[in-house]
Length: 110
Image 1 (cartoon, rainbow, N blue to C red):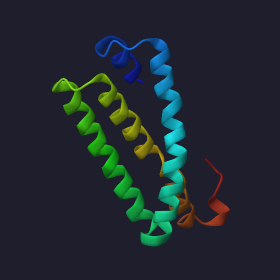
Image 2: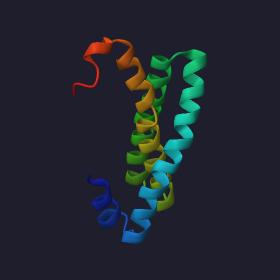
Image 3: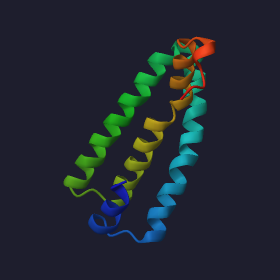
């Protein structure tokens, strides 16, 4: 929500570049969701989810550090796209774990 304002005001990016970031993020998310699915089969869905979420948290921290320390704007943008994609790519794995633990007659109620 607040990232577009940060990109516009703090990083000085134009609206087209900001929208480009919001196009690239789901594309990387698609790729990473395939990677997460394959990894989930090997090491388990929950371990995979936790690993990807921690990687996303690390990217968020790296994004903050990069901005504070004056890294190039492109580096901050790359870290943001990586963070967003890593945090969102495990939605299918999380939902499948949830559905494994919800009785069939209780599904699709919310």
